[in-house]
Picture (tube, rainbow, N blue to C red):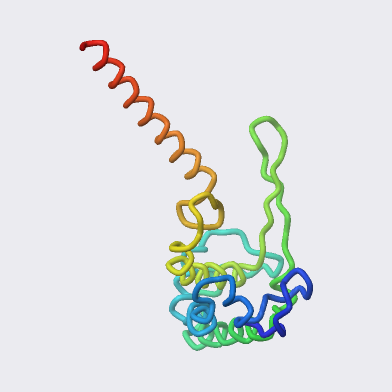
Amino acid sequence: VPRGGGESTHDSGHPPDADTANTTVPGSKTIAANRIHISGPELRDALRKARNRAPGDDDWRAEHLLLLPDIWFELACKLWIACLHKGEIPESWARSVVALIPKPDGDTRPTTITAVLWRALGRAANSRLTPWINPWVPDEMCGSLPRRSCYHVCTADYAQGRRAQGRAERQSRWSART
């Protein structure tokens, strides 16, 4: 975790110091110790999941990176760790491409595509954070977490409503019989 002198992300543009974050986020020192320091095999696995996805501004595809030797993945992870500690990333990771996806009504929806290596590193780090996050994130929070997308929240609410409606109907039928 980058050392930002305890400044907030809002004030400095850098993540908070691990000691400062520990006052508000449970187990933040654990993050600094091992949660987001990913390994070469974890990065390779994340890139496998990114196959057949669009490349970013650098035109590197996951399929290309998967051809590289194991040592490259270890070095890429060391670069990731250095970026976390310094609080800076390579300029190429910050560039993105915006693509417009056609919608059925003729309009378009924008999507942003970043470098595949950046996405894979983030995917691997997020998979390490999920078991730590799930116990303390409130149920109302949705988005960017497994089974917490708007789709999942809406379908869970709908299913819960249908179950409640079914119980009420069964109770009403039972009451009508007695």
